[in-house]
Every structure is written in structure tokens, then in C-alpha cells.
Length: 395
Image (tube, rainbow, N blue to C red):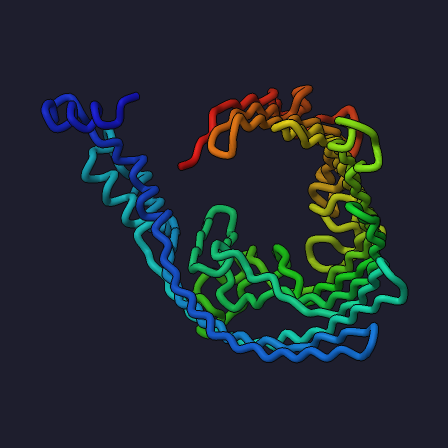
């Protein structure tokens, strides 16, 4: 479709065009505004004691958010008014309905401050061997969609879905231990272990109900309605082991000196507890946290030389939990998959070249998900091989 042609035709022949009034309610429900101001300061110090190097510092951040969003509600009075309507719904009546149901607005503001200290040690006991021990802290800010005002009231189901402007960032306490050995002239092998503990975990909570009284948060309305929102509750712990290896095979004779290989693997173990992934028998997947891949890995072979830069890579993603639930039939998993990719470059000179890339060589599905049992497929999204080729140049 030619967007310019459509606009021109609409301007020339307005009598042939009619606005879809019902569809334009989206203008009201998607009108979000937010302003975030972050002020930060950082202090750092470094000292070297022989083979030991110590780096320490702390960062302070002060965050202020101010937002505005839609308030959607179909009141009993409005529902009754619509039920009494006789005849087809006219455009003016549809506009009135949109404003009555989706025209409300809500505002909010919040402020929080946190300090993020960290200490990093590096020790080189022998030549070419580097060990590192780090303690650090970090935060994961709440998505804007969770804090911009957005309230939807369903009087029929007696539910309220509301954003939470008081959400604080998820706070993580991290430990990392690694050892790296460097080959001469080009290569490295490393192993490591890490742990990340997340507090103030952000999760969906539907356990609360609107109380009684004018100070119930809704001016005394909606008593007994179930509230669905995001909250900071519970914790999550992620532990992992990782290993990697890469080397340019320069010890090989002739053209084979340009070959290089690399591989890495990461193994995770997660557990936690909050309103979304309760530990114990009430959760079909136990305390495993949804969205974390248990095992991931990459292996590749490359070649550089004679103007060529070639790479063949395999990416493995193990089976993992997609959605956890206290209802067994709603526990969903993603099947393990291995996808292959190819990248190739040839430079005629330092100014010009050509390239050919193939992503997902064997058209492995993007999604292959099942609910509880392997034969209960709930999502299958194909992703065919993608071929990109072109010419590069610079002046």
C-alpha cells in the first residue's frame, strides 16, 4: 500500500472515506506520558599490591518519575444507558461512548534513591593466568508500562487492573569468580562461577481486594473488587557455571594458520519465591524461575586470510520454563533447539568488499512450546532461513 497515495486520495475524495469511530478508542487507551529524571554520582579508587589489584567504588542514583495515563471504566450507569439504546449506534453516540469508557485520566509521581557499591579483585599468580573475584550490586528498573498510570475497571467481573507507580527497582547482590589462562600468541580458556540474588523482585500480584471506606484508594468505590497489579515481593537466586575457549590456530602450516575455533557454555540453576513462582508443592514447576535458560552454549569455526573472513556458528538453547503457575495445565516450557548461522566477507581492497550471511541455516522454529506435557503444543512459530548479501565500500 502506498501511504502517500492513500493520503492524497483521501484529500481529493473525502466523500469516499469514513472514519472508523469504534477503532479510534485506541487514541485514548494508548495515550501515555512519562518523565524520568536520574541524578547520579560516582566515586572510585584503585590500588595495586604486587600481583594483586583492587578496584572499589560506589554509585548513587536518585530517580524521579512523573506519569500520566488512561483510566478505563465501563460504569453500571453507562452499561444501562447502552442497553437502553434503540437502533443503530450513530457516530456521535460512538464518540460519546468512547469518551465515557476510555476518556478518564490518572496521574502519579514517585521518587527513590539507591547506592550501588562494588569491589573487584584481580590476582595474577603466574604468567598468563588471571584470577578475578568480584562483589557488585545492581538494579533492574521497572518497565515504564508498569509504572505509568493505567487503570482498567471491569464491573462485570469485579476486577481492577492497575499499574503501580510505587514500584521500586529490583536490587541484585552479585558474586563472580573467574580464572582465565591466555595462550601465546592468541587464545584463552576460562572458567567461572557466579551467584546473583535479587530482592524486591517484580511480579504480578492478584491476591489483594479493594477494602471499605473512603480511603480505600478508589474514593470508597469498588469495594471487594480483585486487584491485579505488579509489586515488589519475594526474591530470586540465580547460580551459574560458565566456561569458554577460543584460539587462533596459528601453529598450523600454510593457509590453515587462519583457522580459529571458539566455544562457550553456561549452566544456570534458579529458585525463588513470590506471588508468581511460589516454592513448594502448590507450584507445578517448584521454585524454578520462568524465563531463565538452564543451559546455553555456542560453538564456532572461523577463518581469516587472503581477504576472507568466514564464520560458521551453532547456538544451543536448552529446554526452559516459560510460564510458571499454581495451575498445572498452565505451566509452559520451550523445547531445546540448536540453530546454525553463516557469515562470510571478502575484501577486494581496504575500500570495497562483498558479504553473504545466512541466519538460521536449517529453519529451526523460533518457538516450540508445550504445556506440562510434550504432546500439548501451545506455540509453534516458524522462522525460515534468512539470507542477506551485499556490497560494502568506504571512501
